[in-house]
Image 1 (cartoon, rainbow, N blue to C red):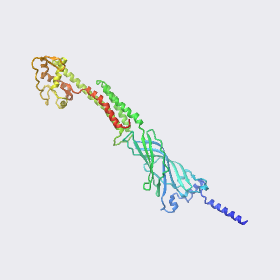
Image 2: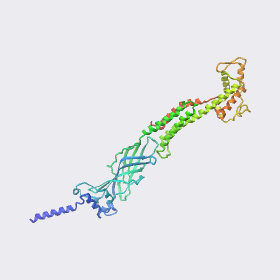
Image 3: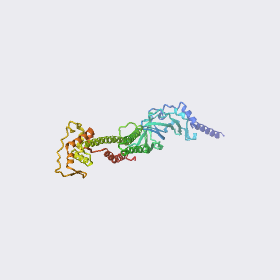
Length: 471
């Protein structure tokens, strides 16, 4: 009878000893253990296990699972994301017996994070550190592996390049590292973040991680953002092209209708300037070429050119009106009233006049006066013209017969010089550049017709070269 009692007593003692070594069975027991003097928060797990400060470094894993791309501030070159930042490490002091607890993992109250040792996470390119974190989960596995999850809103610096805007791709890094001494950042290859959705302007093209190594204690999350160019194409590029076409249409408006022509081009110029300012407000001041800004700048100059072109056209229009009026008056005073005679004397004066290239030097000549007979200091005397022999009527360019008496009148140098003098006085110093004889070698309609053919093709070629794959 004594022997069975002894065996029962031994079994009871073994069970009691096993129950005593079972450790924490519930999260409350684990929290009580953490609050006990045996757990020193100041000692990292390696030091606590070795009992010495020269203990091996404790490995820590970090990963950031981005949920949303909240915004991209191009002006300050910042991105704002929200996601879950998770840190994981092993603390042997928090290990428990899985069979006793009946679970592999215990979930502790989130307030317990202040009572346990935890590494300090540092985000190198974070620009706003006053954003509070929302802690979600604190869990401990049976082997002492701790996992702390917190929802974090990050505002980080991102160096952007806008050369190819609006078809640019930006690379933005989020750099994680640890500030706690005695710990090493260990790669978490199996913890890859899922690609988050973009926002209305940006699409997340790619997302990958640059894992930490023994020599590079930084875990880098790399985001590649592609700009959605549809907005810029529909609401900036195409409207700007339409307003350049409005400027182009001014070449078909009557040259005498100054308010219509100036109003069309001026409105188009102001609208394009507004588009240019709206794009400039989106990006910081940069010292390199931006594709979209180059296109807007070129369009602005094309619109402004239509204004400058009309200024020159209007000037030529007024010069020609003065020249025609002065020539008709001088010819009437000389008794030249028939159309064929007007044509013939115009031809004779032009025959003795210098060509358009030589006429450009007229800008440097002084204004003719009544004293010198309309001839300037740099003018050479008119060459001698042989008079037609005999009394046989001659033909002018139109085929009309002129009597010797009328031809003599037309070939009279004094008559020609008087007409030429009146025309040069009426043309003015600048107008003499465009004179060829008593008529103008370039007129307002010539410029309008020329730019009707050149303006639009040149703009199309330059736009295609600047925008490349945008249109």
